[in-house]
Image (cartoon, rainbow, N blue to C red; front, top):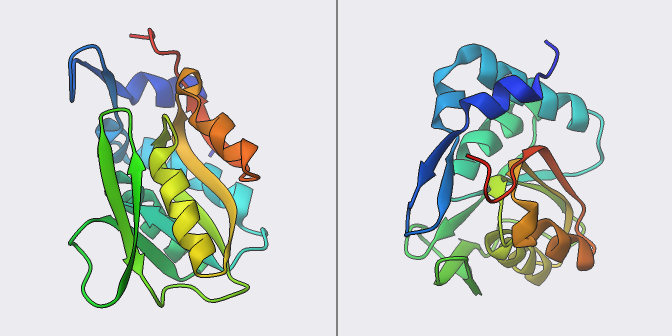
Length: 182
């Protein structure tokens, strides 16, 4: 199936003033409600990564779990979860970070990765990059590396992709939106 960026962009629903006034939330739910769109998105990522040299898939809470689990299954890679505080049992590593809405905390199992592992991290979008930067710090604390950060959407005006690239993390997204795109 050929990737159709226009078709995918039209399915991404803009939700004005969510979660706070002035923010346009990019809702990917309609992609998951369309088998054709989901297949197009999944196949695009699979084609990009099927022969890539990394050992694990990382998925960010919560919408990144949707993509990450599909990719882990399709690419036959172990899945590492990066969750909001208090959601994982056992020994966890914790990383505090800033988002476009305030402060947050990300956790992962302390034994989820080993030295020498390489992780492809998935989220639904790259905004300020705070969550992906926090996940990168957790990966590095386990002496592993980030292969790439991938998402469906980039919001380049918020600078997250640039922040990741500035610390040596390549990024890949299927589409981008300007902040004022309705």
